Amino acid sequence: MMAESDLRILIVEDQTIVREGLCAMLATKPGLQVVGVAADGDEAVRQALRLRPDVILMDLIMPNKGGICATREIVAQWPEARILILTSFSDDTQIVEALRAGAQGYVLKQDVGQELVNALHHVHAGQTPLNPLVARQLVQSLAAPRRADTLDVLLTEREIEIARLVARGDDNQGIANALGISCRTVGTHVTNILRKANVANRTQLALLMLRQGLASLHEE
Image (cartoon, rainbow, N blue to C red; front, side, top):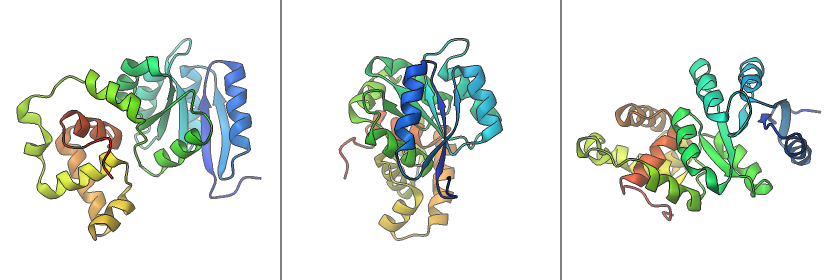
């Protein structure tokens, strides 16, 4: 029986055996509930807009419509959607495109145990689960920004401080606790930072901070 506090998950995966395996694995985890499945991007868009799940676990390579196109369509119609990409090491270029399309994070297909469970909770909480090994590839693959657009020019010192904590993966409450300010104030700052940086979400901001050398994958 589903509890009100359970995370409602939509699984999008074209391979039946993988899809059923994910459903079976997540069914054993407390606090998670699979509310729907989809086998391609078209079905993913329909199911996402109908079910409005807490997190969408999205495969990238699928027939008819891939995960990137599906992510872009879902976010265009439902900007609050939380999308976690399911990928492999060889998908680094497509991960960049998926994050640009509006996904908030990604998990590797070989990490579909507790790593996946953690990533689902992190994405739902507004955090940015970036696997360090893949993140390095992503940062290297991003085009270098123009100097006039660098965040150390666009943002105030306080905004840079908050953006570093976002890049570290902290949610608003964690940032508020670290800086001794209210969660509402953090939310206002994050909204302004995303607007100034011209990015869609916290994951894109984290990658931009890493690419510009303003944050580190090893920050504590």
